[in-house]
Length: 415
Ligand SMILES: Cc1cc2nc3c(=O)[nH]c(=O)nc-3n(C[C@H](O)[C@H](O)[C@H](O)COP(=O)(O)OP(=O)(O)OC[C@H]3O[C@@H](n4cnc5c(N)ncnc54)[C@H](O)[C@@H]3O)c2cc1C
Image 1 (spheres, protein in one colour):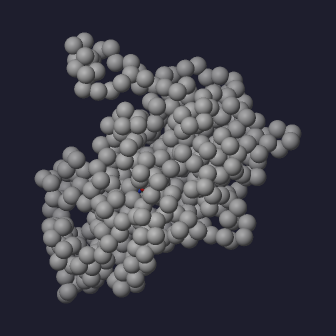
Image 2: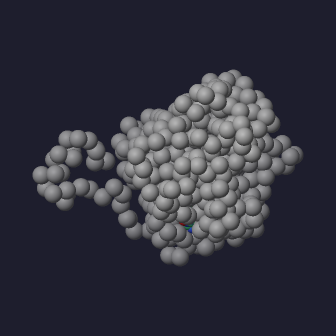
Image 3: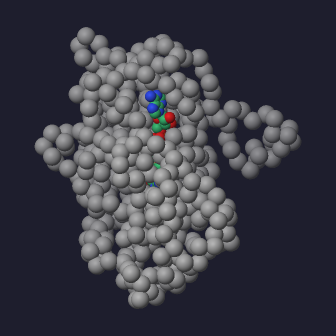
């Protein structure tokens, strides 16, 4: 792999940057692979990378119907955190954060990782109770979460001038998650793609999977794509909001529903906020990007859908919530808005699992799945290579739905 460094930058400047090698190849499509991964989003690419790196499985193709990193990984609000509630979830996200911290060095790719922390702004006593309970669970697993008072909260987030005692929902305190971070989303896809390609993995863009194929013994045998049939010993589904539609082509029904989640950004402003601010009682969260834009997200649309735009009422609701706490932002111009189709399992916990179809694996239910990409890829690669769950993703298998053995994760707003 071509090393990216200040020296290679200087060397390539001498040739007007004409001699950089392509970050990944576009090889011809073969008829057979050991492993096919459907979906070149964060999870699919990370899985391919760890399959090659940790397990030496290199005859792998990642099939992507659009362009690499053009799905939800390009659409999220880049919040990385580990403040979950359940003993099953917390260690998984703690591991993901650990991997993220060293990922720029590991992939030799600048992910613009910034550990700036997250503050939950609390406005109701039930939410405060829930978050304090979450804090105690998190402390058992070495994750950070601490309460702060209202004056400290206002000191740390100076534009937070709403929510006083006279308001509809006065602020009663905050919780600080210092481990939380942001990092550049497309760079995660590009970094993993480059690392996987370097280890022999093939990435095929514009190669949509139309249907999964199974043999006479019932096991998976391959897929039919826009570019013809490809056979494989193992197939992994990593298609985010489209998991159910692809799985149904082989008669597999999964406990997932797809919803639209949206975000929008403002014009660039001078530096105002240096943490991720999450307001769970109002259903809105925001951070400020390195360019100065406010990156703002809200609650999902309530009806199931595959839409990737934003409904006007959802947008207005998020803006109204934001202005309750940040009234000075009413003068800020908004520049762009978008949405993504995300699938969510019945218990809001992800699925990393074998299926009833031998050789078919699934990684889905990634509601807030950007933060989970390193651990999701690591553990799915382990499952594919060894045919058994990684200890961290053991509770995330489909078996939990046989006996309603749910890992219920109550919602927070910051995905
Ligand atoms: C508005 C919004 C805000 C979000 N904010 C956050 C956040 O702050 N923090 C967080 O952790 N998460 C967040 N998320 C969620 C996060 O983006 C997703 O959970 C995560 O990106 C999903 O994993 P992925 O990257 O693998 O998915 P994707 O990037 O969607 O990858 C799936 C790929 O599969 C491809 N595909 C689909 N069907 C086929 C097919 N038939 N054949 C071939 N390829 C196919 C798609 O084109 C896509 O490229 C947010 C999501 C949205 C929409």
